[in-house]
Image 1: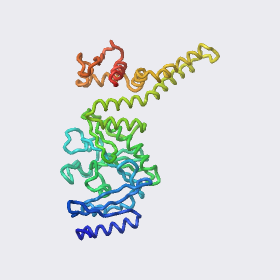
Image 2: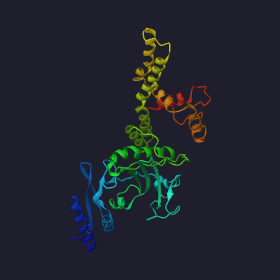
Image 3: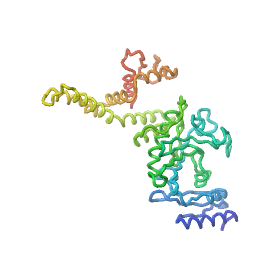
Image 4: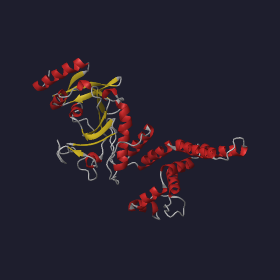
Amino acid sequence: MMKHTKSEESYARLVTRAASAGLALEPFYYGDRDEYFGITLGLPSGRSHRTVRLYAEDELDALLAVDFENYRYADEYLALFHTGTGAIEAALTYSAALAHNFDGTHVWDLPGVKWEHGKSDERVRRYEPPLGWSLSVSNGEITAELSPGSAAFKGLHGRHHLVTDVTLKIQHELGSEGPRATELLDGVGRDWLFELDLQYHIGVGLAIVGDRRFSLDRRISASTPHFPRNAYSQEAHALYWYAADAQGFPLLQFLAYYQILEFYFSLVNRAAAIGRVRLQLKDPAFDPTSDAALGRLIDATADAHRGLTGEREQLRTTINTCVEEEEIMSWIAENETLKVHFCSRTQPIRGTRPLDLTGGQGTVRDQLATRVYLLNP
C-alpha cells in the first residue's frame, strides 16, 4: 500500500506505461521504518537490461514527463539513446572544469560556447553548472555537443545518480538508422573529449558508474573547439584515461603514460623500417640481382628486428617520430616551471641529469628518451 496518494497515482500511471512497453517496473520502500517509497525501472541495454532507481515523489513525476519507453542504454557507458530519433546522451566523469567553484577554465567558458540568452550564472541549485549554454561541433554528418543534461536524461536517472550535471549529446544525420550508439561514443565521442583534454585540459571523459576523474591546472588553448581531426586507437584511449585518472599516484600515472608510448613501439619501428626499405628501392642504382644491394636492403630492416628486444631504441624512435625537436625546446623554454624542473643543476628526481638545451649533450629528444627510459621501473 502506498504511503502517499500522489505517489500511488504516479506509480499506477508508470506501471501502465511500463507494462505496455514490456518494461519491468517494481516498487520498493526504504528508510528506517520503510516510510519512503521509490521504484526500479529496467531499461534494455544490449541483450540485457540496466536498472534505474528513483526515490522521491518528484522523481516519479519527472519520469512520467519522459517518453522513457523509447530509451535504451548504450553498452558500457552511462549513456542513453532514443530509438525514435537516434539521439545519444551520455554522462561525463567528474572534472573540476565542470564545478561552479573551480578557479580555472570551466567547460562553459571555452571559446565557441553559445548562450541562449547571453551569458548567465543561472542555476537550478547553487552547486550546479549554469543553464542555457552549449558547445557543439559538426562535420555535417555528425553533431556532438556539451551542455547541461536534458530533462529526459535527468528524469531517467533522478538527482542522485548523475556524475555531473553536464552531458555529451551526439546526433547522426541518419538518426536511428545511423551507426550504433556505442560506435559513435567509442569513435567521435571519445575522440572529441580526448582532443578537448589535449587543448584545454578539462579532464572530462565518458562516464561509467562510479568513475571520478580530475583535471590538471595546465595552460589551455585559445582556439575554438573543432570536430575531432583524428581517430585514435581504443587501446591507447583506455591507457590515456587510466593515466589521467591516477592523480595523486605519480608512479602509477608514469607507468600508464609510458604504456601509451610502449603501445606504439612496434608500429613506429615498423613504419621507420618501411621508410628505409622504400628509399633503397627508389634508388636508381638498386640492383635486385646484386647480393650487396640485397644485403643493404636487409640491413635497412635490422633495427626493427633488434627493436623487438631493444626497448631503449624503440622508445627513442617513437619519441623522435612523434614530436619535433623545436616543439620540445619551445615548450620548455616558454615555461619557467618546466625550465627549472628539467634544466636546473640539482634535479628533483635522483639519478636524472639536467636537460641541455644547447645541443652539447645531443638532441633534446634523445635526452628525454634516455630520461624516460631510466625512470621506467
